[in-house]
Length: 258
Image (cartoon, one colour):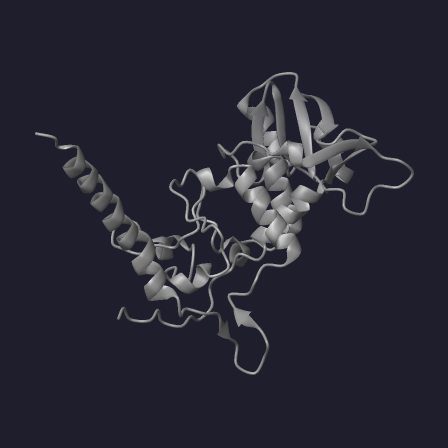
C-alpha cells in the first residue's frame, strides 16, 4: 500500500496548522493595534524610528546584540522583569508595531534592553560600554566592540566627539593588599587586573598622586598621550537606537480576538 499521499497530507496539515496558529491568527488579532497619540500633542507612543535610529537598529542586528540581549519585559512568579527594574510594565504588542523584524531575543547573557534608555541616557556611558564593557561594569563578560571606534593621533585640536576616558593603567613594583589599599585611598576605583597592569577610574589631572603611593612603579593614561578614540558612524547610530528604547508609556489594550 502506498502511504506517500497520506504522509504528504500529514506533513502539509502540520505546517498549515502551525502557520495558522503562529502567523495568521496573531496577525488577524493584532492588525488593529496602532500607536497611541499623546493627548494635546502630535507625539505618538511608540514613535517611528528616525533615520539614525533605524540605521542603529541595523547595526544592532548585524553585530549580534540580539544573541545576548532580549527586548521583552516579562512577568510571572519566577522570572519577574518588573522586580529587576527592566520596565514599568510588561511588554505588549503595541510596543513592536514599527519593528521589522521584532527582536525579542532568545537568551539573556546580558540584561534586557527594551527600556535601556530609561536607565541610561549618557552617550559617554554607551560608547564606553561598547569600547570596553568592563570599565563601566566590572566583571562583565560582554565582548568589546572596539571595531566601532577609531584610535587616531590628534591633529591640532582634539575632535569634538572624541571619547573622554577618565581611566589609567597602574603598574606595581609589588602586588599586595597594602598597595591596593593605598590606591583606593587615593581615589583609584573600579580596579581590574589586565595582564599585570591594573586599570581603573581616576582623575587624569591628578595621576601623579598615584605615583606617590608606595609600591606604584608606573601610571599611564588609558588613551595614550597624543591620541584620541573617535566613534564611527555605526557607533553613533547604535547609540541613537538604544537611546530611543523606552517603552514605559501607557498603552492601548490589545483588541479581543473575534
